Image 1: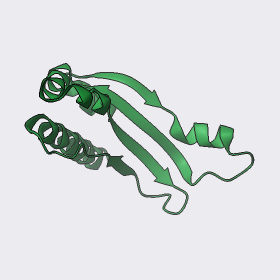
Image 2: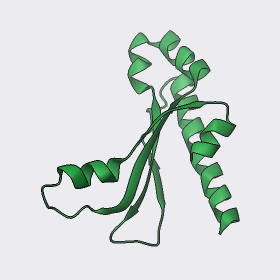
Image 3: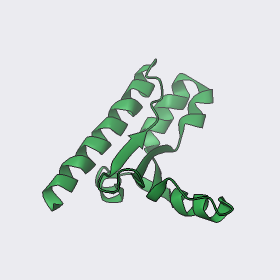
Image 4: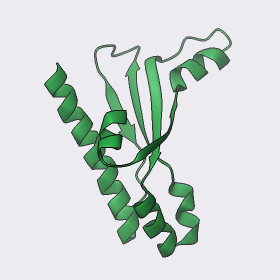
Length: 113
């Protein structure tokens, strides 16, 4: 996912080790994940378009895509993201970008197997 985002000319803000955080704070409870991370990134041009439409849309940045493997399905890698709602041109573009990135990562993942 990091390679896909960077190939689109965007900078990764951070990769959050979500699964490890759950393990640390679980107080002995079993994590539902084998592994889980959240990749956060931003497109400066898209962020500018979103805030020019509505200043409060700054809350939509950074965009993020979660990657996880669950205990229940240890052979399945899942990519998930939160849609922006797409009710404006810039939000629609953000939703398209997220879908494109996930599709590209899935495509590249198939090539590597």
